[in-house]
Image 1: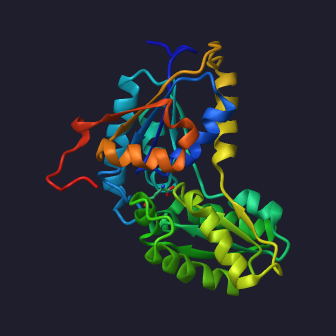
Image 2 (image 1 turned 90 degrees about the vertical axis):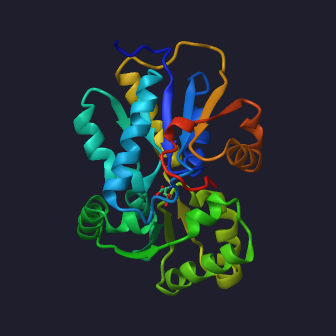
Length: 287
Ligand code: DGL
């Protein structure tokens, strides 16, 4: 069946991180039907092997296609790096929007020529990321200082935004970046915008007002790219009402409800949470 403008848009992430992208999509495209999939049972993706991530992305994409999604947004840098190519090959006519850490906008912004990149180990190790880094280092004469933030997405997934453990982790990860002379830090994982305030407070504490530091995340750019793709395919919704958002989770609905209440209080009452029990395929306890 050919996609139609009234079909929904599917958005997925390893967990709640992609909600930082969903909020931009909802703001820019308020009349679109949205379906979100949080793979919280299998989060974090950042330290998983590539094939395991590809398998998860494959079954989530199949699930979203069964809901007739006209476009799918991989709202996860790690998943995009591992699986976007495979999914594009398998579904060549499907609108599939991936994410990559905002190295390009960071190049436009930096004055010192030193750019910090916070991301998962999976993203930093990927060929896709390495190619982008090599290309931009040459064309823009900049230096990228990478910081793998092992465990940080997991802390956010557990809703520990300001716990002593999370703050200690942020300090550990930010210190080398700040000492490197960076004036621009890329938040290369969709979970990290949810600790943006904590990052800003830490930078303020360590640098005072001396160093104007820009934090880059690409949620809005992805929403704009999605809008352009829908327009060029004649698939933008013609509806004038805003609809309920359906959010599925492979973890527990209570976990997603609690995250929504904390992270997207203004949208929470417009979101119906469902358990995606068919996606739980192991014996472990969901978080
Ligand atoms: N939110 C994901 C990203 O953008 C990954 C977090 C994780 O599951 O490790 O990279």
